[in-house]
Length: 80
Image 1 (cartoon, rainbow, N blue to C red):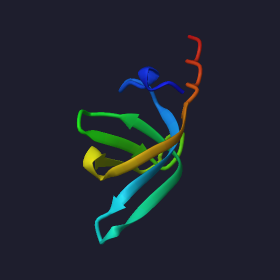
Image 2: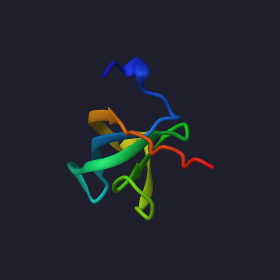
Image 3: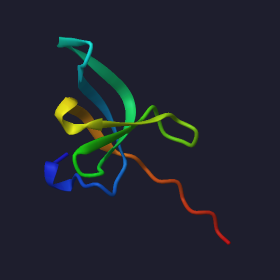
């Protein structure tokens, strides 16, 4: 995916690698999560798609990499 297609209004599936605050030389890897780029300066991460998943905000200074990035398909709106 070209980086120019990434924006803060879309949800993406991804693997996120973060600096480990408890081990400065280490990292934490979050696989199969749903991410949103924003609010500015932050990466919003959910444990997976669907309602009820835990959501965390990470400052971009802690983010080492975001890989396997793919847009999450949105469920169709129910017809009225």
